[in-house]
Image (cartoon, rainbow, N blue to C red; front, side, top):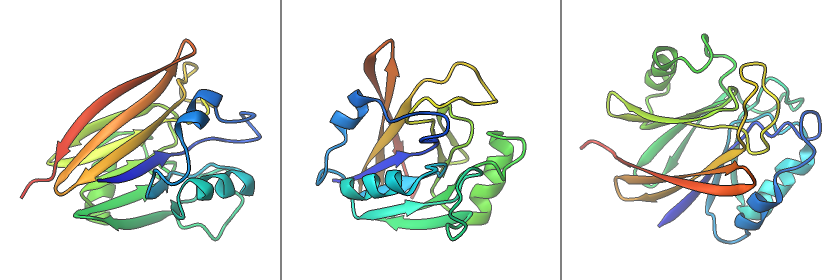
Length: 184
């Protein structure tokens, strides 16, 4: 079992003060092996906090990140999966499945992780898995006024990715499970 935290669009301190306490209590050090972040952390402190959860941290640059050394896209190999990562503001129209499909083919990945919309979304298309973890803080978005704080934990075992979506709804954490098997 390999646990991968997929998180992003926190916008701390500009659009949100901190990550919800109920999320922080779930995310404890030494349980997660890898972190994939879609960017818009907006502060070095948040990146340092994520590094306390797992040393293997992969971050791409969001449109509000000041750290210009972060890449626009990144490919990460974990187990039998090649994971492509991009913040998503570069993909027009934002969150569009066809546009994301083009990026997935460019990166030649099994799983494409993007953000920017602040809305959780996961779906399969042409045998590939697409994940947007949403905003971990529920930060304001120009795309929607109804942002639900969310993040994703992926359990990678062999050719199977079991995805757990954590959403904070009415003060309670709700979890949904999505299974994906990589085609042979």
